[in-house]
Structures are given as C-alpha cells and as structure tokens.
Length: 437
Figure 1: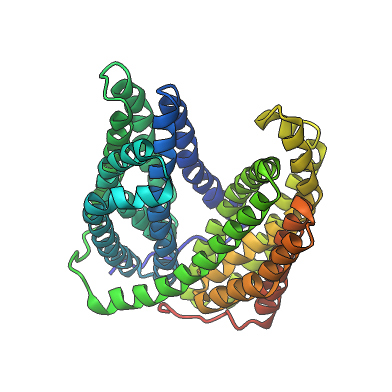
Figure 2: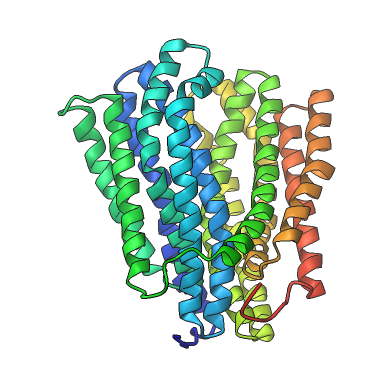
C-alpha cells in the first residue's frame, strides 16, 4: 500500500489547489455558451429545444457532482493517513456508482424523453426536437458521471492537474466538433447532441484510464458502496433543499411580472458566477481538511478552516466592491430594456451586501464537506431554507415587496446558514480524526 504523506497546508497550497479547480469549474459553463451560440443561429425552435433538453441533462450532471463530494471527503481522509491506494479505491467504488447511474438514466431517457419534454413545454414541435436532442446527448451521461467521480477522488488525493487536462481537452473537442457537425456536416440540432455525447464519453474514458493505471482492485466493494450511498443521500437532500430555495425565488419573482423575473435572472446569473469562483476555494478546503483529519492532524485542519474562511470573506468583499461599482454598467450588458434594468437594480443592494457573508459560507461549506459533516450540512440547509428563506419569500410575495423582497429573503437564507456554520465550526464537533468516516 502506498504511504505517501500529503504536503503541509499553506496559503500557497490552498491557491495551488483552488486555481486549477476554478478552471475545471469554468470550462463547462463556457462550453454551454458556445453550444448555445451555435444552435441559436438555427432558429427559435432548436434553441428552445436545447434549453429544455439541456436543463434535463444539467440536473442529471448535478446528481453526479453531489455524489462526487462524498468521494472527495472519503478519499481525502485516506490520503491524509498516507493510504493513497485506499483513497483511489474510494474512487473505484464511486466510479461504479457513476457508471451504473449514468447507464440507467441513459436507457430510461430513450423511453421517457418525449413524455418528459412534453411536460416541460406545451409546443409539440419544441418538445419533439428537445426529446431527439436528449436521447442522443444522454448517451454521454455515463462518461460525464464517470468524470465527476474521477474529479472526486483526484481532488481527494490533491491531484488537480490531470482533471484540468481531461476536462479542458474534452470540452475543447466538443467546442470544435459542435459547429462542424451542426453546419458543414448539416446535422443541425442533432450535431450539437453528438458533440456533447462524444466529449463527455471521451472525458469519462480518460478518467477510467487514469484509475486503471493506479493498479488498485477494480471490482465492486458492497460495503464501501453502501457507505458512499449513505453519504450521498445526505448530500442529495442538501442539494435538493438548496435548489428548491432558488427555484422558489424565481417563481415568486415571476409573479411580479416579466420585467421582474428578467431582472432576477440577471442578478442570479451574476450570483452564480461569483459562486463559481468561491466554489474553487471550497474545493481546496475540502481536499485539505479531509487530508489533515485523515492524518490525525486536527490542529492543521483548524488552521485550514481559519485561513480559507479569511480567503472566502476577502473574495466576497472583492466581489461586493466590483458589483457595487458596476451597478450602472453590469445590468446593461445583459439587456437594453430599461424596465428590466430597473428591476435588477432593486435586487442590487442585497446582492452586493450578501457577498462577504456568501464568501464565508462557501469556505465553511468546503471545510465541513472535507470533514464529512454531511448530516449537519443537510440539516442547516433545510433549516435555513424552510425556516428562514421560504417564509421570507412568501411574505415578499404576499406583501407585494417586489424583487427587493425576494433578494432580502435570499440574503436571510445566506445569513442564517453562515451563523449556523460558524457555530458548528467554533464548537469543534466537526473535528473527527481518522482515515475513515
């Protein structure tokens, strides 16, 4: 068994892990923009079909990301204890789960794509086109979920370089292949789906090759699979509660009219961009905290928690300054509609004010994910979502408080999470040392 100890945590080490993670996180959204631009020139129906089919595929990919967090936490503990082979073995089991889930969904989509798209959009022409795109694109889902599992265990062993090459290479291939298949080859919307499936399959194959080269047993282990599923259950419930909160915000914003929901979309997309950058810090925290606790170094884990919290707050302050200073410019980059810009600016003060708190929340999220404190993370999301956000956003709708009321409720959601997570971290109950969870 390999017994290589991980490097000591430093601010430079945090940056060395966070920056490649940021690139990996950014590649997929950038490719989606390219895909949207290519398909958009085919006309309104193909673009609408891509939006419908792509949203279904995004949910499936999100499920894989949820489970990869659990793989990272378990692999990082093993790696921190000097058990690199055991850390990679966690990735093997995560890959079995990913392959099984991806293949199951891909088969189910061949039969269920049209009924599902029909529920999502009333126009039968768009629904048919979306179902066709989805049936092809979903064939790449096993590869996509294998890539998320691969990202999970590689983050656990603090190998951020290979995922960067694999994900970047596959998406560059797709970005080149998509316009070629759509236009010169003449496949239209189906060409976009083929490009997606090809790139995702290639990415999965690269991660499979990487794990095969580690020379660890590749057979399924029912005990480890069961433990990963239990951890994944808590992460899934956590993610559903979070997604439900943001979905509810959009629903209430829509009740104030088209301009309000359009303004909400502008602020929300900028929020997601900020979250993308701050997630990179959380990934570094997850990897480092898991490794230090796995190696029995509780003091070092607490050091990482303090440092990444400071980095998170500093990042949030930086975003607050930029977003606040850009209030007169940023909404206009997305629309020329004055009513929409006015509505976006109603959300702006809350959007700006919550950034430092959000930076802290993302950092602490990474700390507690790395510690394997999944049950608490599940509970605090549910408590802040149902106990703070949902009453707040419903009140905003009832009192006709407009988009400012919706974003005030989102700010409350973030603040309650921050308070709960700070109390948890200060209590030290997340500090559980040992190679296993």
